[in-house]
Length: 182
Ligand SMILES: [Fe+2]
Image 1 (tube, protein in one colour):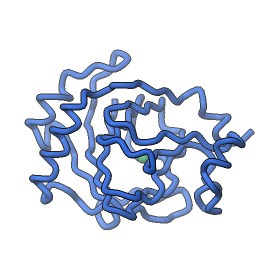
Image 2 (spheres, protein in one colour; image 1 turned 90 degrees about the horizontal axis):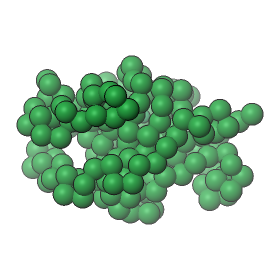
Image 3 (cartoon, helix red, strand yellow; image 1 turned 180 degrees about the vertical axis):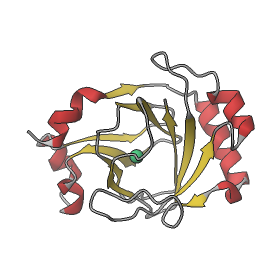
């Protein structure tokens, strides 16, 4: 049984999880405030399963950080009976990536939302060897080793619990995504 078999029942897609206008506003907010982002290759490093380190920036949206965004969009958001504990804006410059990992915070549900559409960028779940051995992702998906979720603005890519291994391969254009933790 490969890892994707173990987790495929935990993965779900919610089209239009966030409205396009909300995605645009969060990007605009982020572009105006580069100082709120931390370099996650240096601070709060969440190492990959094989000890490697990603290259991306993140900003927290919570009662402690970016409160206007928290109040407007997240404080009262409901998902499967849960409200978020926090959300995170991830920012990737061209070439940035996150290696295969599991998240290190406590979560019942995690929803990842790309803030722009670009089918060459994606979030992948499944067998980490596909990443480490540089296997073509289309082939690997056909062989059911991985599940690829291409960036579609406002889509919610949901996983239950904390077990699913996931990664973002090097992006080919600047990318923003949201990670909402319930
Ligand atoms: Fe993650």
